[in-house]
Structure formats: C-alpha cells, structure tokens
Length: 138
Image (tube, rainbow, N blue to C red):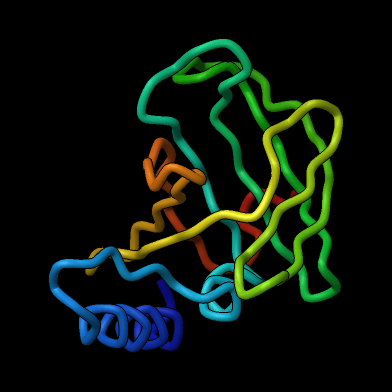
C-alpha cells in the first residue's frame, strides 16, 4: 500500500479500536469509501459454493465499480462486470446487478490492512486485499 493509504488505514483502525473491547465496531460507510475509492479490492470467500466467485473490483470516484470474477479458488479467465457503489444510511453499499450479491454491509479492517465484510447477521464470509489504484486495468 502507499504510505498515505497505510496511514489512513492505521487511523481508521485506531479509531475502531478506541471503542468498546467487547462490541464489534464497524467502520462507517464514509470510512470504507476512504479506503476503497480509487483502489482495487480482491475478494475471496471463506468457503466456496454456488454463486461464489473470486473477484476484483476497482471503485472509481464517480461511484462506479469495474469488476472481474472467476470460479472460486480456480485458475482461469476473469470475466468482467460493472456496478456502482454508494454510502447509504451510514453503510457502504455495492449494487452489482446480474444476480450478483450486493447490498449494504458492515466492514472492519485489521492491522495488516485486510478488509472484512459482514452480512446482516454479523458473519464475515469474505475478506479483501486492497491494492493501490487499478493495477488490473479493470
């Protein structure tokens, strides 16, 4: 990560850790946007299954998502897709269409800069590595 991205990630992590040690402290939608917008995330599900693909998504400043996916944990060609992102009701939301999972989610980030997404039950089933810019030219 660039030093500015690393510093921003550190500041967000520090603010999250300042909360209660017993409660899960999620990032605000604005905090997530500061980490991912202008960057690429690469997501991997904890468990493979129907409809679960490895994916890469570049989040641009205009609210668009430029993505590519392939079969979960498989080597092969990446097929492209698009969508858009927004911050709504304090959460970071992804709207991908074409039957892809989307919605407004909760997120945390660890000290290594790995971003975790949580569903409405508070379960994290996907983690993201964050890459500066758009290295895959999505």
